[in-house]
Length: 222
Image 1 (tube, rainbow, N blue to C red):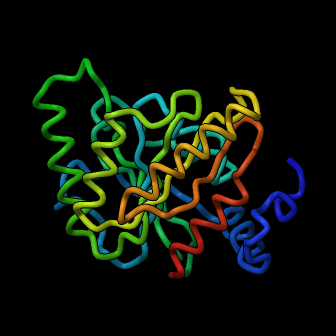
Image 2 (cartoon, rainbow, N blue to C red; image 1 turned 45 degrees about the horizontal axis):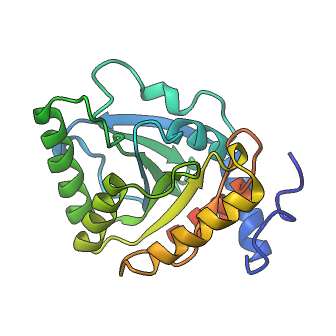
């Protein structure tokens, strides 16, 4: 992978970027899966949540972000796909937690499963005081869909700060990516809880990963 500091957004803080790089190179472990709010870990550390459609590449992005090939798969076993999966970042001391939210947009899922997902996510978003930011993943090949807008509106209503992250940016031409990113940022400006800047990433090529790590740490420290 090329020098991560050089790949950062020009406005990024190099000192924070280096701390983010070291942090994501250190201890990161799967903590637990929570099927309901009563199973959440104690709110003892800041949390950064990841949301996205079921096929958006969330596991791949989490693995790229943490520089570990199989971290996100630790919790992907039958029966856990509709749970909140927790990962600890840092050890003695714990710095923050990553929260892998269940994928949405599964058209074939039974209505009761979809209803359970909405209740779990709504309750988590509204009641988790340590939640610092939600990262909403959007496939750069498709842009924002209606099902994504539903989630953005849910986050707006819950007054949860969120930032949109484009995935699979290496799968389209640079000119197309530029257009998708501009359109996505225009959409973000319509939402009161959204961060105005969108990060384009590629789990395969490492594009935007250093910038995303820095953005995560910035949200944790805000």
